[in-house]
Length: 478
Image 1: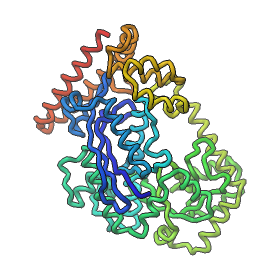
Image 2: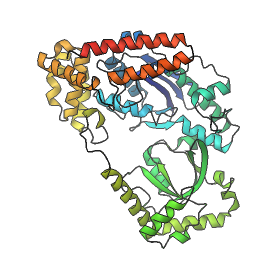
Image 3: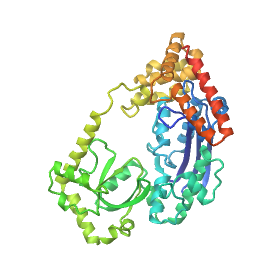
Image 4: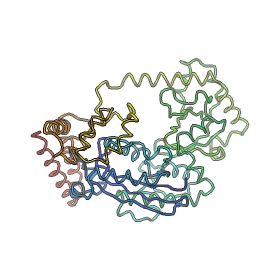
C-alpha cells in the first residue's frame, strides 16, 4: 500500500448514539512523509443531547457545537469525499479499531452513507496501538513510556506524546492526535525497519485468515489486564480454526501447554479442564481487527517458551493441527457458549439506529445513496419511497428534518419531532443520552470542578447546562 491515512475523531458521546463532530487526517506515503491532510469540524445534528464530559475532553464550546461552518450532514459528506479520493489506502489511527471505526460505521449508517469505507476493498485498515504494543513488547526501548497507576507501561497516546517530548497543549483535538500518532509511528518505523512491513501485513481480514490456515508457528501480542503480553501459538486444524458463530474469531493454541493430555478428552471433560488453566490455553485472534502476527523467533526468546526446545514446540503444534476430532470438540464448546449468550440477550425491539450489524443494507439501497445525496431536498423527500430498507427511509426523513425542515409535510415534521422528544425526554436510563442523564452528568462534573476550584470548567459546565435547557424547552412541547 503506497498511501496511509492517519486519522482521529472527536465526538459528542462515546456510544453509537453520539456524533462525530471533528475529523483530523494526514495522508502519508509509504515512508510516512506527509502528502495531504484534512482538518474539519461539523455541527452536532439536531435532536441529539451531547455528553458534557465529551465536550470538556475535546474542548468543544457550545458555539463550536452549534455554529460551525459545516452542518453534520455536509461535514460527513466532506469526510466521505476526502476518504474516497484517498483510495486505495490504508486507514490507521490510535485504538481506532475499538472506537473511531465503529463511530464511522454508525454515523455513516445513520447518514445514508456506506458504513465500511475505511476497510472495504480497495482500502485496508490497521491500528497504531497494535503496532506500538508489538514493537514495545519486542524491544522495551522503542518508546519512552510512563507507568499507569497499576504499574503497567502506558501506551495511551497523550502519555506517549508527553514522554517523547511532544507538545500536548492541543491533545484531544482530532488533527493534533492524528499528527501525534504519525510522529509516534515514525519512531517505531525507524527502530523496527526490518519488521515494519510485517507489522502492516495483517490489515485485511483475508490476510489474517490466510495466516491462520497455514501450518506456521507464530508470535502474537495481546494486552491482558493492562500488561502487554507475547504468546507463541499455532492454529487449530485448518478446517476448524474459526469460531462457528463469530466467523472473524480465529483460535490458537498456546504452545507453553502440552496438548497431549487434552486430545482424548470428551467435550465435557475438555470444557471443565480448559476453564481451570491460567493463562488461557486457547487464544482468540480477531481477523478483522488487524492483529500483529510475527515470526516465532520473537516469543521463543522469552519465558516460558525459551525453556522449550524447537523440536518440542513443533511436536505440540503438529499434534494440535492434525487432531481433527479435538479441534471439533473445541468448536462444540465455542458454539454452546455462543448459544447460551444468545439466549440471555434482551428480547426488546431494537431501534433502527442500533441495527447496523443485525442485517446488511440491500445493495439496491447503497447504490441509491449517491443519487439521493446529489438531489435537491425536495427530490430527496420524493425519493424516500425508493429505498427498499425502511431504515434508510427513516434516516432520510430525519436528515431532511435536520437540514431542510421546511420541505417536510407538517404531519411528517411533527411525527419526527415527537419521536425525538419521546427519546430525549424519557425519564428512564436509556442507551442514548437523555436530558435527565445530561443534567445528572453535569451535576457530577460540577462537584468535581468545585473540589478542584476550577472556575474555568465550572463556567463551561454552565454554558453546557444552558444549552441542554434550550433543547429541553424546544422538545417539551413536541
